[in-house]
Amino acid sequence: MSKFLKVFSVVSMVSLACVLAACGDSPGSGQPSATSGAIARPQSTAAVPVIVAKVQRSSIPVELHAIGTGRAFKTVSVESQVAGIVKEVHYQPGQYVKKGDLLVTLDDSPFVAALQQAQATLARDQAQAKLDQVELRRYKELFQQGIVAREQYDQYLATDSSARATVAADQAAVETAKIHLSYCSIYAPISGVTGPQLVYPGATVSANSTPVLVVINQVSPLYVVFSVPQQYLGRIKQSMAGSRLPVQATPPGSTAPENGYLTFVDNTVNTTTGTIELMGTFANGDHRLWPGQYSNVVLRLGEQQNVVIVPSQAIQAGQQGDFVFVVKPDMTVAVREVKTGQTAENETEILQGLEPGETVVTDGQVRLVPGTKVYFTKGL
Image 1 (cartoon, helix red, strand yellow):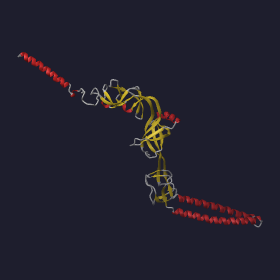
Image 2 (image 1 turned 30 degrees about the horizontal axis):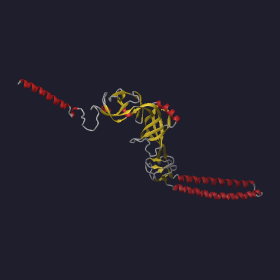
Image 3 (image 1 turned 90 degrees about the vertical axis):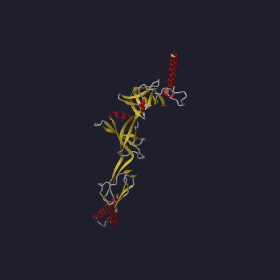
Image 4 (image 1 turned 45 degrees about the vertical axis):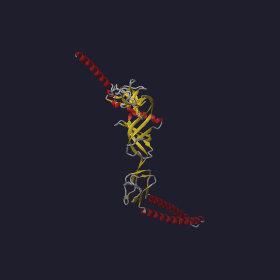
């Protein structure tokens, strides 16, 4: 009986070992099954999917980034040249007007009457001048015949000269009256956008004084003013000597920049901020930029050749500075501290820490720590 119990115990233990071995081969044990499916998986379930890119040697634009403010290319305050009463306003606030468009008309009745009076005076004096000319010719003949004295001839000669001068003055008065009459129709001196309406029909205006009739801002072309640190002044002046420096301005809510050129460098450095004011000129044909509007400005100074670059999204910020995750040949990652330089067009210059040909992670860093196994889902 004791022998039977011993044999039974041995058989039970062997059976239990077989059951445990079978459980270890089950699909839930962490080992992939050869017939589990057609989807390829990494060799280890601990591997993290990442997107990677190769470290390259290339050229990178040298750019300065700043916040700029739009400024009207021209600003004109339109005033009346004559005193009068506003008869009609022809513009709408905020309207785009072209040079020569009618803005305001004044009551021209007094000026029409003044012109008619000047014309009448001219006609009277012209008639008198003709009579004086006839008298002068008559007395000239009599003087040449010795019938009249020299004094009488000289008197008629002076009268004729005075009549000519009077006619000339009358003609000038007529022209002046015409000019004053023309001032009753006030036109846009430049193309641009009108400001708020400042006068209304019935208002009295004075010559060359308040109230201003309207303010017009020329927005095409348009300036964008921005400032950069003074240490870049030498490089900017050097680059300007060779060619026009391109400037891009991107208004808020837009991803497409407006292209222009640097046209002005201030003649004084701001000693309070240590910056130098610059100004770019933009065609602004679609009026995307606006006076007073802030925009992101990029000033391109040239290109730096043969530099090490990586996609900007590979750069991570840490307590010790910038770093990247480098993929080693065994498909694990290591942390590498880097020193960065210029950033342009989603590419960042690496001054120290990486060599061309190395592989860096550009997406998926949040799940990584040094030594993490990875596999590539995209990149290279």
